[in-house]
Length: 265
Image (cartoon, rainbow, N blue to C red; front, side, top):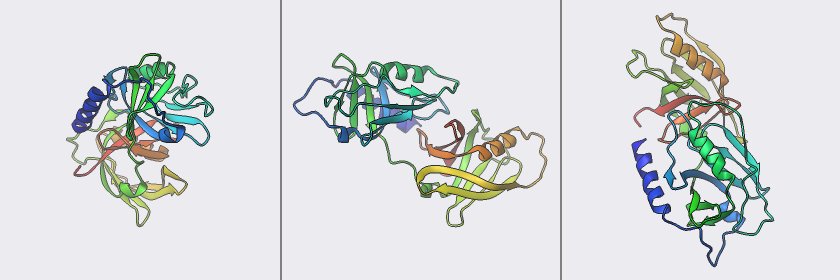
């Protein structure tokens, strides 16, 4: 997490001095298509709350739809492909209505989107969203490629579940392990071992679920963490990269259920 925070701070310090002023060449829609991490709001570096995903916005320049995540809720909306190049209106962005422990970042983002009037491509990796002044209101950075199922191979230590951190001093630390060749999932929930089938979708790279999960039947003094993990596993419908290098597992509504980090990373 420290490396990511430092790199984003440096990006914010440099980009915060840039300008949204007009230039001779204005980037067309194709140049801004794709997904962008939101790394700065009104001159402040974005640092997500623990357990919440890094905010991003995506622009589909084929049909004029926008999507993303504001740090808690998913974003949906549209933009006018017939608008003058260099101008964009994101005031119509809507968000789902989940409540998270810390909504400060999300509220700031939604307010900022409502003020955006222009965009400027700074270089191949950075995009400014601007209000009426020349100072960037939002600074975006090209998002890394979506985590592929193949990158799940191996053993991942479960760090949090249902918003609660998993103690690192547990006698049997919970983990999940993926066997992509056999299409299997295996792990330890803190007391019992679990096994099941890994279900993916070729048409949706981030879609994932676990079928026919079975566990051993041991009884331990404290089963709370295990119960939370098994409950989460049954609800998982997608996964994605988290700031800092871990992965998050989400339910059908996009709620973060569980965080894990690859053993040795």
